Length: 148
Image (cartoon, rainbow, N blue to C red; front, top):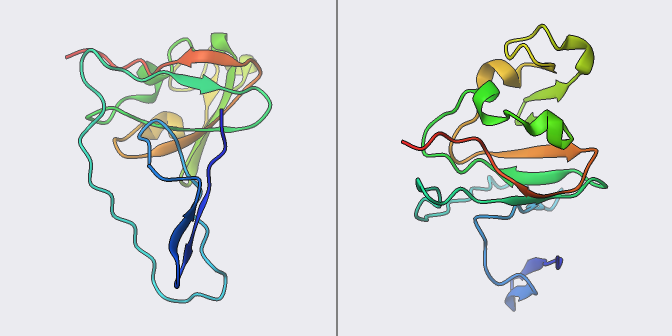
């Protein structure tokens, strides 16, 4: 994979190697620490999730991975991550919430399979991103989004 970045210069505009935003990637947005002006981001796009198009994510076992939730409707946590623990996923963190796989809790928690944390009760929502850690590199991780 290639790393891309861009910065905004008041005199030159956007400069750097990042020229397009991909719905299959995540991005860090840095704000100058002395800038007290409110900052808003608004993106307009068409949904990427269709009944026949569930994107795959390449998960790196060395670093945390940012992935987006491509569903068109909220999805129950237990349904969405079915099989993820067996693939090596150990943590899923969202804004202000998270879940971790703990084999010692295989008969408890809302999923009854070792996933614990407040994200298990919240589920996943369209337009949100999550930080995922894994003990294995995974070349084609997909959300378990039911076809409707």
